[in-house]
Amino acid sequence: MTPPEILTDQPHQFIEHDGVRLLLLGTAHVSQKSADVVRSLIETGDYDTIAIELDEIRYQAITDENRYKNMDLVSIIKNKQTGLIATNLAMSAYQNRLAEQLGVEPGAEMRQAIQSAKERNLALWKIDRSVGITMKRTWRSLRFMEKINLIFGFGGFFEKEEISEKEIEKLKSGDMLESTFNEFSENSESLYKSLIDERDQFMAARLQQSISKPPISSAQPVKNVLVIIGAGHLKGLANYMQAPMDCNQTINQLNTLPPKKTWVKLLPWLITLVILAGFAWGFAKNSDLGFDLVKTWFLYNGVLSGIGAAIAGAHPVTIFAAVVAAPFTSLNPTIAAGMVAALVETMIRKPKVHHFESLQQDAMHLKGWWKNPVTRVLLVFVLTNIGSAVATWVSGFKIFNQLI
Image (cartoon, rainbow, N blue to C red):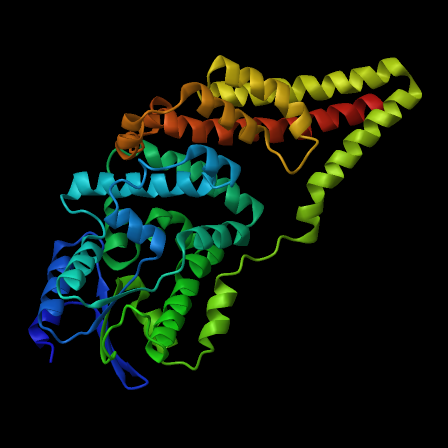
């Protein structure tokens, strides 16, 4: 049995499910004490299985120091994964700055759990939902103004040289994802649901599923499981573990991206049709008006997209590519001006190995995103798209005014 003194002052709860005994241990992500407790519990030999609040992506982030060195920028851009990579980099930068400030690597208890499980040849279950799914479900759950506040607030996050006491306290009782979006999750029911509650449900379903049908990694019968989670998940996970649940249905449901509203999917095509109809109407009135409308479209889309690329510090050839591509890509919802610009920037600047090696260090500060060619490609993608989006609406209104 686990010596009770190990768990003194540690948030925890013992529960049983289908004859399997589980210790839910609520940890602090910036506490060496939590890491020490994890090591001590595993060393007792009481547990045959360790479950951790990580998904495969974050597991690789902890265990693979070369994950960014092997990054294929071209594939990332083509597969529209720039937003996920940028978010992961920002979170990694936040963790690194915490480590510098506190002298403790955030997630030390997870690293300890992985190391100790390997040393004792114990089954290791990664029970959290993919961070990519979590971020996408979070984004789609937000209203327009919440998205705007999140974007601008996230940018300001890099300007903080010191992590505030409030944010540190949040980490002592919560979760890395939640603490990164601390001030937003406190005031947004949508953020709380997707970042915390949904993951409580998901982890409960994964645990129950793994208990009923252990993964191949469980070489021996599962009888005692140590579940290591952020303390903020303790109550929710315990409640869901003790409630009847269709595990497969819950996992599938929480892994599915909410469908975009019909009007959201149709809006880009509707804008294209309206603009093209405007051109046709203009030429029907007289050719001079038609050419004026086309010039308005090309001017605003080209100039604003080029400005976006220039703000990102793009190469002159990349800026030119953004200027030329934007008027055409803005009429084709399947291709973004930022994608074209980012691919050109990648081919011209060709980030070297040492740029990938210094990626995490450079991403810790706002100016580093412009300094490192890898993050600059991400900025080119984002800022060129923003310029193109603004230009589409501005030129659209200008065209409308010219017609009437």
